[in-house]
Image (cartoon, rainbow, N blue to C red; front, side):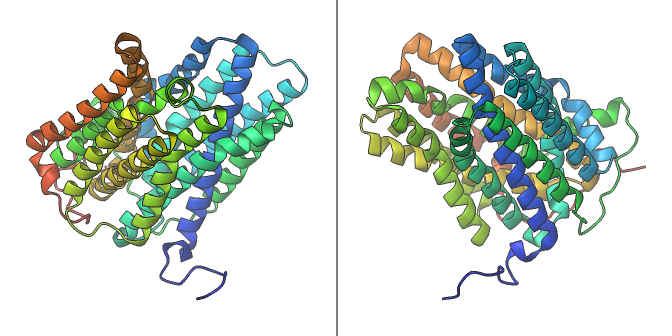
Length: 419
């Protein structure tokens, strides 16, 4: 065995460009997760309204829908590093203002909603642009491994970010906000140091055709459209995590500590899978692996819905997170490897909107279904619906089921070429 030290030379983390990208992404995700905890706690402390907590999610999601077409074209026309850095500076600056207002005791609920909206608008540009930047940090042959390892940054942030935010909140909300602002500054510096391994092609000038090119591109590639839409409906139907507080208190009869374990369990499974796939990339039968992952996601949702024991519920959620991460890695790899450089921003923006819709609307769907049918039936219906979608999508998108290797393909169907 060897001790600590630098990663081996064949490790993807030995590539400095990707290492800076990965660390910058980790800092940004940590900041965002900590911010979500602080804003949620502070809004509820000020208003005492559960509805206001739901409105936080709406304020975050609305800008991504409104700006989807603009975001993609900006990401394809301009330096992606500058776009990401600018967004992170805006996020850090807005959070710093709230930190000062909180410290002075002058923060209001309206100010917090304004902060959420500004951060949501900045992230509407940042997230798809970061996704489009990833392929330029490694060689094409290492991209599937880079996608998996990049996903670990998100999962580490999801697991540890809320815990760190809660710990710092003991010192006050201002301490959390100040830390978030500092992390966004660190992220912007790391992204600014990136020197891409190759230059991106610039997109053509904006017109009505090029603005909608991302939507047409996805719609015109059956495997890619099938992967993105399958993930959308699977998460939309199987959003059991939105009902975790109800399960923790009324079904599993545990306290806040149990709720914390339940919330962390999917991210633990996802993180373990991302690390495994970073070390052992998917070599064959990628399409089948995605369908198996989504089916396992639905089955784990059903097991969780029926469970009355905390250990079994935790195990089901770990499997759920692991299965979801397998489908995520396949989908992201397909998208990254088959999208022309000059269209990555627009395709990433559409993909980001799908991801946001599945997560945010999935929570809304779970809440409405639970109100109509009850908590357990709502989760079971979601799990069964996910399995039904897998069976249906295998028939509708046979091209996705036939995808074998995650490899670069010729870009013969691009909607446009750069001018």
